[in-house]
Length: 213
Image (cartoon, rainbow, N blue to C red; front, side):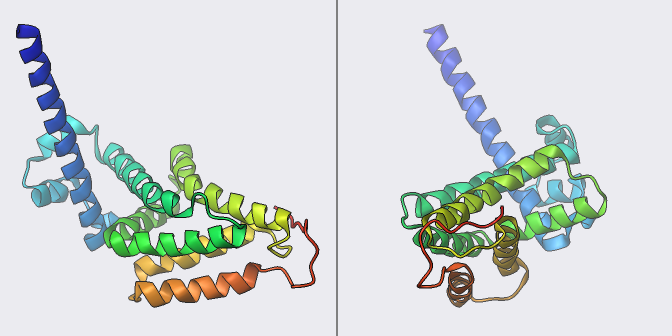
């Protein structure tokens, strides 16, 4: 009986701690999106969460640790939103258009998430403190898009172009939804039309066309 009670109490504490960590991360995202990365401090995040800075320090080693958790959470949430909407799509053209629509849909569903990420990345690049971990998290989205473009070139659906350049341009265009006052639906449609035409192979192109990565 004692063992069961102890286990239940431990599970409850673990659940409460995870919920508290999640609350702090969400408040950090809101603060960064609204105030800008440079203006955010642990004290401001604590006030927003209605807790003391000591509570934040209990869960996170400092601002840098909290920011890493924010980035991890945003990328994981984005991946969970976009991936199911793209997986299984074929041919590559359908996968590309689904990727663009889902990515803009994520921005619409979580408007502060990408705004916060744009703030964080811009500030860290300016300070030249982008870490390998930061780069690895950013590569999740980039790698997924790269695979789609490479697949489309290999099948002959897409024309020859430098995949790395097209990947960067598509991602930058999607990210505009977070920093511009746009209607997500029409904006996604415009991007779909734009990149459908930008990537599509000429009708007479033979299968197997490839471009430099």
